[in-house]
Image (tube, rainbow, N blue to C red; front, side, top):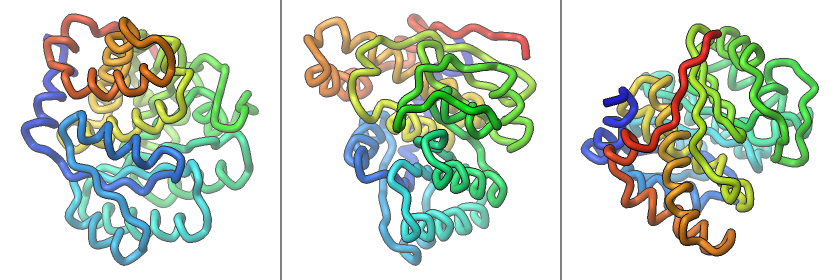
Length: 263
């Protein structure tokens, strides 16, 4: 059995509480995918509330997709409490290459908090690593560059996960590629945000590297299964929730396409 397959059963056994300060576009998707994986989502829109919840939660996801000054205050309040509690903090730097505001916001979280996982598309990750990335809004056409991802992991101390046609996860010392998924995953909004939620679920019960690999592999396998009978993006999105809900550790063992690569 590969080391990532048992993570699913661990999530469903422990039912971790996952606090998510996320974006307005995909908040419902993030909550629902969290439930489908077997964890419990909770969201917050107030600094004091977020701080209290982070003290009770098992992991924290920060997604800057629609961040503004108020939400950043809420995120920092939650992150302060999460750091005190010692729970994993996952950052999804949505659109980090699209504007200076988003990029600088991500940098501040990287510099101020002990992040466990930084998860974004290749363009967002490359932007944080200092490259002029090709990002259109929150989308990217780039393939993950191992040297850039590894450099960001070494600089930040976090596991870095970059999604694309082939996903890449690295801690700066070791790395894996994950080839699970389907082109339909690029036809709906929110797949990356849901991957961040999945990573936050897994990070509550597994080491950051394993959590990042699991989240991309599990979501990719569920996507492959959903694409068999989905006729288009609308049906695919609903089918994806169903397939995550019915996913098993055996599915992860049988269908995982994980390849170790040299850093």
